[in-house]
Length: 386
Ligand SMILES: NC(=O)c1ccc[n+]([C@@H]2O[C@H](COP(=O)([O-])OP(=O)(O)OC[C@H]3O[C@@H](n4cnc5c(N)ncnc54)[C@H](O)[C@@H]3O)[C@@H](O)[C@H]2O)c1
Image (cartoon, rainbow, N blue to C red; front, top):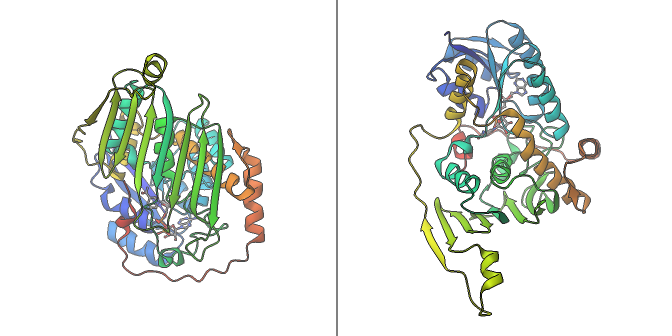
């Protein structure tokens, strides 16, 4: 079967990273590149000896590509994906799939009317320790989830980061801050493990640590249909941050910190112990297990998601991160933002029209003057996170 010719749309930090490995993925080759910024575009088209396009529409119509990776700023993921599906092209979208759920639904609709493959770049789903956590939860080892605590405050970013890239950290250019840029991965893991909450109540601080108009510090309380509760805390201004994931279930607790996964396994279901123990201060017998994490035969990360996307096109392989699942983390993030900004609990499914109206009002009322200062030669891979 012939190679899938992939067009990379948006050849900034992330697009260049994808270009760097694409030609070495079995069954894939770079078909063309697109960017609105001519300098970067020329550099990439010369480096990879492919045709360049200043406008994504021309690339989609060129006949030079079978699939696209969309690595533009988030707002553009939606129109580009919809147009690509209409042209019968497969789409791998960078995270977040869109800025808000209404746009993500429009992408899903366009996908449903096509025969194309739709994936989203949630590369943390390829990391063995997260796969193991998912397995322990889905197999029932942990029992029914009663609480999730996810403290992910190690997304530290400097003011120089926010000053770079005109679109970053503005309502108009990005549509949000830490929830939309850094946290889609964390929120995806949260929903992958614990499912969707039915209600969120949050505090979102706008520009607490940085001169920006969007949120950089968040504390959210989550409620689930089965009565389970959760806490999600994130920040780009705290150092040294913490990355602690704790999931308590009816058969014990999973704790992930510093790449070490522990399973505190209760010998008896906790509720059964509570109901039957005779001493008032008795505690269930608990075994602490250092969960062995198998080595992956493939290198975890972006490349593995792309390989899987190509195999889904060529061989019908099941997607690790289907595009349709991108809406879930987005919905949680949107709901947290809405709750934080409106100072009230928000129920899910989220009112997509209401969220969009709130965002449009923030854009309309924005008075923030962004002074853009690009950073030369920053190591982009330092933005990746586990
Ligand atoms: N999966 C990950 O680990 C990861 C990491 C970083 C960024 N991202 C995502 O990748 C996307 C891009 O982020 P980045 O850091 O590379 O940003 P960036 O600013 O470095 O690059 C974006 C590029 O897109 C170009 N562009 C803008 N609008 C365009 C359009 N309509 N058509 C074609 N090109 C256009 C810009 O000129 C720029 O070169 C974002 O959605 C971000 O969330 C994902």
